[in-house]
Length: 191
Ligand code: GLN
Image (cartoon, rainbow, N blue to C red):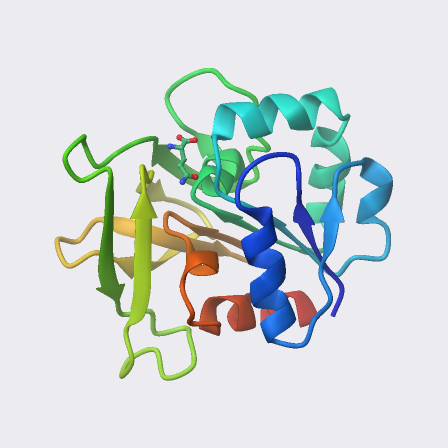
């Protein structure tokens, strides 16, 4: 599978490494033409305002929206923010998924934390928790329409959603050694 990783800012190298671990040579996406012939696109974690502004600067907003009309797209952390339709403030967004997201939702003392997550859509998901790594993470406020929540913290906070071939996670599967989320995304991209 040909998966691209948006490589303007943030943790794109780590996604490329995970995909490599699954046997897929991933490519870096910086310009609209880099989307040609891809089967899926990952928007990494980083800083969502910077990513959105750079996407505008490189003329990527409309080409990525068009790409997303036919293909799988996954946003992690800042990438989830960019995927969302509502974030309660002004900044450039793709606005693809029918989700509302709150940035930096976990307060100062616990800016970063780890929590095992039950994610039933993953292989062995019910039996084997996925290591959720949260870094100044957003949370899902709601998922509407076709979007549905696929992971929650123990306190009920929603932290991942899927909508057709679009995926969003508050946390960073690219920073763990568990490849199941990338495997799940490649399956979505395969269609
Ligand atoms: N706090 C960042 C933002 O709001 C996201 C952090 C991350 O991607 N790890 O854009």
